[in-house]
Every structure is written in C-alpha cells, then in structure tokens.
Amino acid sequence: MANIENDLKSKNVLVTGGAGFIGSNLCDKLISLGAAVICLDNFFTGKKDNISHLIGQENFVLKEGDVNQPEFLEKIFDEYNIDYVFHYAAVLGVKRVTENPLLVLPDLDGIRHLLRIAQAKKVKKIVFASSSEAYGFSTALPLKEDDGQELIANQSNHAHLYALIKLIGEKIMKTYNDHYGLPTVSLRFFNVFGPRQESSAYGFVVGVFIKQILDGQPPTIYGDGYQTRDFIYIDDNVRLAIQALLEEKTNGEVINIGVGRQTTIVDLAERLLRLSGQDLRPVFIKDRSYEIKYRSPDVTKMRRLLGDGIADNLDDNLKKTYEWYRKNMFKQKA
Ligand SMILES: NC(=O)c1ccc[n+]([C@@H]2O[C@H](COP(=O)([O-])OP(=O)(O)OC[C@H]3O[C@@H](n4cnc5c(N)ncnc54)[C@H](O)[C@@H]3O)[C@@H](O)[C@H]2O)c1
Image 1 (cartoon, rainbow, N blue to C red):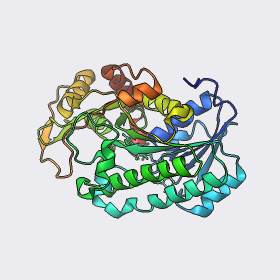
Image 2: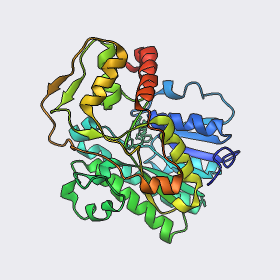
Image 3: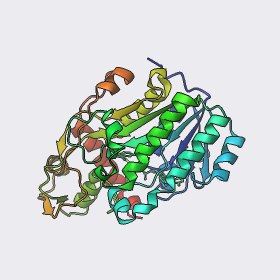
C-alpha cells in the first residue's frame, strides 16, 4: 500500500472545485500531508468561507476561474509544474440539474481540455470525481462497477444528463489511461456528507435535514422514505481518494467509494432528530419522478485496491456534522 503520509510531500496538486464541500476538505488534508495545493474554483456553488483559513498559507494558491475555459487552464499548467490533479469541479445537485438539464454540458469541455493539457504536461495522475448517479435506475444491488459498461449504451436508464457526463468522463479518463500514457482513476462517490456541504434547497439530504431541524422545522421526506442511500463521511471519502491517487494498481479503474450499508431516508431523519433532542416528526411529501429508489455499492473492489474500508459509525459522524452546522449555519444561510 502507498503511504499517504509521505508520498505527497512537496508535490504540486491541482484541485478543481477546491472551494466546494469535498474539494475544500481535500485541500485541507493535502496541505496537512505536505503537498502544495493549487485550488481552482469559479464559486458557482463553492464558497470563500470553505477555504478562507487556507488563503495566505505558503502551500496554498487560489485560482479563481472556470475550469471549462482552456486558456485559463493552460495558464495554470504553464505557471505550475502540476504533479497530480483531482478533477472535482462540476455542476451538481439533483434539484439544480433537473431544473436546468443543460447546465452540465460545459463540464465535458473541462474534462476534454484537462486531459489534453495534463497529457502534454506529463501529469502523473488524475483522479476524476464520478458519481453513483452513473448507475442510473439500475436495480441490481449491490451496484458493481462493471454495471456501467452496459448502462452507457442505454441512455434512457439515466434521469439526468449529469449522470451521462460522469459516465462519459469515466470513459475518456480510461481511454487516456489505457492508450495515451496518462494515468487516471474514476471514483464513483456515493452520498458524501459532513461539514461544509450545501444545505440550501439545492443541497443534499443530510445538510438539508439538519438545517430544517436547526430552524425548528420537521425534515421533509419525498415519498414513503424507504428509499435507501449509502452515507460516507467526508474524512473517509478524502482519505480513500488520496489512497486511490497514490496506488498504482488503481490506474484505469472505476471504483465505488462508499460504506456498503443501506440507510433509509426515514432512518436518517430519525437519527438526526434523536441527536438534536427536538420533538419533531418528519413530514412526507410527494415523491420525485427522477428519484432513484435504492442505492447500495458493492465495495469489494474498493477494499481490494484501497485497503480495509471504513469503520461504520454513522451516528458519530452525523453528530460531528450536526455540531458543525449548529456552529456555522449563519454562514450557510448566505
Ligand atoms: N457530494 C456528494 O455526495 C457527491 C456524490 C457523487 C459525486 N460527487 C462529485 O464530487 C465532486 C465535488 O462535489 P461536492 O459535493 O463537493 O460539490 P460542490 O458543489 O460543493 O463542489 C463543486 C465545486 O466545483 C466548483 N465548480 C463548478 N463548476 C465549475 C467550473 N466550471 N469551474 C470551476 N469550478 C467549478 C463549484 O464552485 C464548487 O466549489 C463533484 O464532481 C460531484 O459531481 C459528489
């Protein structure tokens, strides 16, 4: 196994989407491991607050701009000798990409230009943030990485263009890995949660529920609440992504990143209500046509390539997240 404590010292790492939820937590970890981080973000959903504590630090540079603009990207690669890239910038959020389906299309340009430039500059490896959405409406649980091979041929299986962009991105990453000498790995993130995640109406279920509870409102659940998701804490997600970067045997692979445990949305709401101590009951509202009922990753490949997997301590991690929102929610309201 690669040693994540040593292998990043003095390496230049570009994090696109570095002011976002996952990206900013990744920047923190990379800096703590001795890397020099170049954080690229256009603040579409990212926030200055997420990285304000890093601005001015010797090993951190913020480049504000659009990753889908080739001139901007080229300038960064000319200025810095980039060793590694985490490509996390993307338009996301189920509500956002459903209301504006075409908003995601320019993200293909970012993937295209990044690969072209990174190959020319002999980057050592790219980690691409893909998504469990790549599985579309697949019902064959647990979801295995190779399922994607059939799904890409069946576009009607996908509710969002977002999912297709991720699948196409994976394919292009693999092509560059296999045929153009640029190592890549695509990580299919399941539901990541933790401090700094968007909690507005366009946000994600853990943050949305916590915000509702802190506002004294009941959590609103779409449908019967028995849809399931796999919730992985941000620190685990970040650690596994860095491991995936450093392990050579992940080159060219697509890997699920999750806990391997299904949690219903009702269960999630009840856990959060319990730890809040508030006397509230969830409210059930009409389900969404594009809502995928069950999501559960097969984590065999993740364990084989990245190590032992993750301690399953959902309640402790929900508590840490809840406490963070309690202290920081005034910033989230902006
Ligand atoms: N959060 C999850 O549960 C989850 C699940 C699956 C996949 N992912 C993937 O992980 C990555 C990070 O997601 P996140 O949850 O941190 O979301 P986020 O919205 O907090 O982060 C995305 C970041 O990318 C930036 N960005 C978007 N378009 C950009 C552009 N054109 N140029 C420059 N910056 C741009 C945003 O401003 C934001 O800071 C995304 O690629 C997402 O698709 C996340």
